[in-house]
Image 1 (cartoon, rainbow, N blue to C red):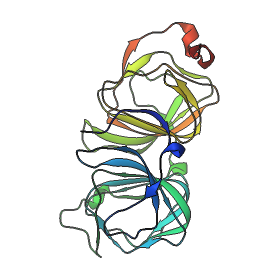
Image 2: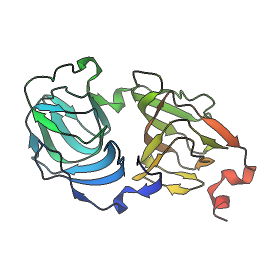
Image 3: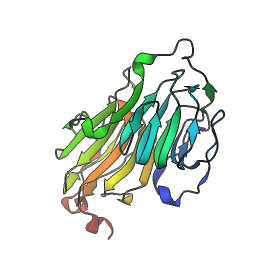
Image 4: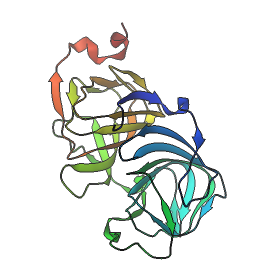
Amino acid sequence: MPRKHVEFIQSADVLQKPWVVDGLLEGAHTRILSFDTENSSSTELVEWKQHWKSDSGYFNCDVEIFVLSGEMQIGQLRLGRYTYAFIPEGICIETWSIRENTTALWMPERHPLFTKSLNNAPGAKRELYIPSLSSELIPWSTTLTPGFPTGAMRKTLRKGQVEGGTSTWLLGCLPQFVAPYAEYHPNTEEQFILQGGITTDAGHMTPGCYFWRPPLISHGPAYTETGYFGFVRGGNPHLSYHTWEPPLHTYYPWDWNK
């Protein structure tokens, strides 16, 4: 079966176990946040220790990486905090090393296998490769979801190549941001909270919290008192449909808990 609905978990509560990728050195640990039993795609929180290292080579699938703390290096490229990489299937990456204890979101599109090589695999699409993209260098822009409430902005990390595919972005919301309705999407949606906090009908999410929703799952309304910064993967485009308008008092978390 595909990934189960996760609404929501604190990643620190997830059991940590050895991170195993065929072709790569062991020594890292992972917390599996969500997993697809049909194609073995996953979203994981991986922790590498200082001095971990890999030879150059390529993966058998697309892989996304978003560094949360520490620093890794791929060839001469540094990936520090809040840096993103998209490694397409078959693209040869240079020697990969961990300069200090590092934690990152690790997101392969199926069960990953690593082949040591100095060259790309045949047919690899190098034009899609995003080797190191620091989010600090990306300007804020308006949100793209039609009808999304004011008070939020977006930093696009990767836009899917085809309509109906997936995209990856960062979402920032101002203090006292309100999404005063429940909504659903025709596509999957997942988020990992980086900073701040946000309260929904499911509870109060703080840094380290994560959810993964299948299509058509109703959620909301939502409110943040302090502001919110999160890592998001969703549709391209990420369409949203409203389901109902709650009374005004339900906008606020201290009323939702009654």
